[in-house]
Amino acid sequence: MLTKVRLMKLDREGITLLVMLAVLLLLPAYFHNDQYIMHILIMCLIYGVVAGGWDFMMGYAGIFTFGQFGFFAIGAYASGMLTLYAGVPTPLGILLAGLITAGVGIVIGLPCLRLRGAYIALVTFAFHLILVPLINSDLGRAIGTGGTYGLLDIPPLAAGFSVAAKVPWYYTLLGVAFLSFFAIYRITRSSIGLAFVSLRDSEPLAMSLGVDAYKHKLMVFGISAFLTGVIGAFYAHYTGIVSARILGLDIFLMVMVMLVIGGMGRFPGAAIGAFIVTFLSEALRPLEEYRLFIFGAIVVAVIVLLPEGLMGVLFPAGRVGPGERFGRFIRQTFTRQLGKKSIEK
Amino acid sequence: MKILQVNNVTQCFGQLVAVKDLSFEVEKGEIFGIAGPNGAGKTTLFNLVTGFYRGSGDIIFDGRSIRGLRPHQICHRGIARTFQIPELFLTLPIVENVKVGVHFGGRGAHDERECINEAISFVGLQGKENVIAANLNLFDKKLTMLAAALATKPKLLLLDEPISGLSPTEAREYMTLIQRTKKELGLTIIVIEHLMKVLTEISQRLMILHNGEKICIGPPKEVTKDKRVIEVYLGG
Image (cartoon, rainbow over all chains, first blue to last red; front, side):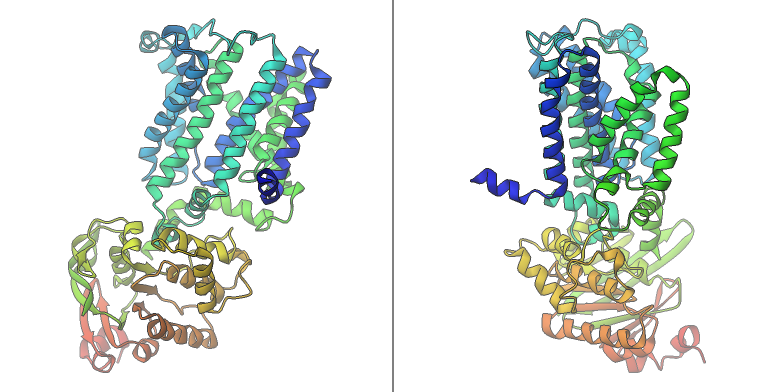
């Protein structure tokens, strides 16, 4: 009965998520013998959560951040190091990695409290860029990152979860991805989500109406970093190897393309974008370096033709016209200083 | 009884002194008007009172200092404001704009839905609850901003040029609303406005600022006859 009532409260985005879950549950029935397809599906789920966490920050809270893969790497390394060196059981290591990443996220969020728009992007991108030399340096090796070799032989999630055991991994990661997206869905529809959106739309008004900007912004950083750190940890245990290559700009850009194609701030666009872009990336692999060129062209075309991404096509009756909303998003993101000026006026 | 006391408040932006050693008091239940030329420091004063700027000096609200408090804390103490250029949550409908005020500033409202409806009805936006704020005209945007501010259940309401950009009919309607707010909700209201005619009509007392300094304060009739006010603001 309770389930029935809850289901009835789901809006179209929630129903889209459930439909996706239903379809994804069935896929191994057709592809369980194809290791390659199963691997791509698993990577779709992993990137989907990264993109979802990123969208939570950028699309819902309006915090223009480039630090998402930093959180992913910290989660991966933290869980890898805890399980390899401290003998922590893998599930506990994953949870601790999430918490450690959330802590780092909050620390990164602190200087961002006084910044706006592009300045937050610069600080978080600096955090991303710092991680690569840190991981590869002598200091990194001393901490236990393994330097340029990275971490090898990271234990699997449990017995039977070898890298070749795609189906158990797939269902586990599907569960994790669903829980992550469901958490984002619930948060964005709660009063906390209302605070995030209000701060995104007009920080001065939100604060004057009683919204604690500092608390909610730190909360966004913490939640997004936690989800990304957890999926980073799962990635480490799935592949068994982690190196600074996961901070490469190609993956970074690919996840950004997922957001654009899915639709920023259009739940669950990030998940849809993850599947499309990951498969597209594989399909375009024979084109080698031209692949990025095609991706670039796709991004430009999507921004011009479908500014709200595929979610805008699926549900065109958005709250505001798609072009207007996208234009506003860009304006608000890059000209947050204007908000301050309007106070001064 | 004084609800607001501003004591020797100064706000500088680099070399510019936007508000200079300003002191004044606002009585509970009055409509207090503030006028002055552009750059006089009127909005800066609102930003100081609502915690957006820190400045120096002290501000006492309802018997307690609010110096150093952040905007949301000041809202929780009972001060609400509107903005000169309408600030709204443009992607949200009116009802959710007002909900932010009720939920985060309403200080434990028991029935949020009822509070939202009350605020929306009070400003006359009933029937438009689900209209997205971005699609509203200027007048309705200003009304929504007012409804959200009222939804925080304030004791003191600061209105920053509430009728600028409105048609004469809309301006008249808004002025009536300000008077109703005072009468029916018992609020103290501070209004910044350029139109002296409006201020003299609705305010019990007026303060004229010039270059961040108070040049005159008192009942509208006295203020409009003040030589310095005529010289720097009203013109010969």
